[in-house]
Image (tube, rainbow, N blue to C red):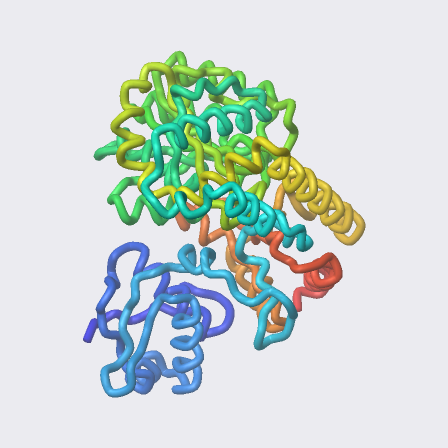
Length: 455
């Protein structure tokens, strides 16, 4: 049995949630590892001077977040997944009650009304005799067609993408893992101080060190990037458009400044642009401003359909020689059926129609935000998530607890922070995750009420 003991005096709020937070922190920093056996409910309660029911409630919450698991007669063990991992687990989102939460913690697109797009695509493949072939290994010609379609999709961002520089992957996360796997080695990677959970999980898995970049209302600050370059850091992961979790988007002027810094210091950035088509299409990508210094990552899951796991990695010209080896490794992860549907939807306009619907629905949800909440109370625009800046992490946790009691689940900035101390405090609320605007309006009303009363 591990000798781990949570330090509740450092946490504010409910004792049971403080225990869960201590568990998450201990797993993230390696003090608790998968397989470690935790103290029994009664022993931990005795050690902390709490009721057994409080520890039982904490263990149940930790199990819900996939941090721990238990078996009768064997005890409770660490599973080794922090809260960031739970953000990829989609709960029921059809009703908001304390038992079946309205889960606004997971960043998903708004649910698209039934369109029969997939049924039509599969029927067309069946009629043409192509469907059965997609259960076999893909042909080289299939990937050439998909790379050409990917280039046309990326062109919507104003980025001229040579198909010969494109690597096809099983989603944007796979693309990010691929390019960082070539470049990171033992290098420290600099990223926004609040960074989306996928990068955290990759770093933990690969043993990479993440260094935080200071942020403001536009995202990563140029002075912080320059300071990192002067300190010898040469590898960055940046999200200039609708950054997750803050929703920040860099102005065109800032993008030019950062591109100039990358060129001057011969630094390299991976531009994560999965939300770019939901933002201002006129803003240039970093990859278009510094093509020799930036690898561009995007996909279709955040803009077309979550289950369409097809990602695109555009490499700088100097890295083109890696593509042959990269595709031999990455394309086996891509489902030929998904790849073919993605190619057809890009070609026949279905992907563009679904993107247009999502932009329209998100615009309606943002109008709801503007109507219910006060200017300055929130940040973000046009994207699927909203950021509520708060004066402290303790206050963010209090809001999260209050919403959870009403069956509304959001996530605090601590989940995204590269460093627990000194990072911007707040709460991320996923607008797209609400099954309809009515439930979203109820959640927004509850947040406004809490802001007034603190309860």
